[in-house]
Image (tube, rainbow, N blue to C red; front, side, top):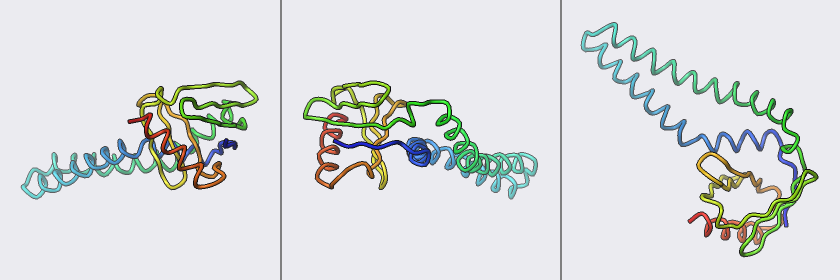
Length: 159
């Protein structure tokens, strides 16, 4: 059994982790656009080159601003609005089920209902679908053995 209350900082880490692959691809495309713009400019096509450079660099700046300013503010607002995110969660599990209890209710799901597991140094994200996930901060686990068991069951379920 593990328990804890999700913090705003953990929620923000989870959203950044969830978005990492898409943002990395986005930045790659934008930097590629800027590089093509530099080549286009060097070949004498000044206006299209400047447009491509501006779009690429501006897009990268926009991604940075979104990650460092917009996303943290959105998470703070969501945490104020959604009481369930501030609730104390208690999770328990066995070979077939993952259960959660809070002051707002109780849920029980089969491990096989989950589709994907992602892990970082601080968190596990256990996905219901490509865009819906539950956040499990590693700080909630009491010991390494417990974390290893959770990882094993979640990994088996997620394929």
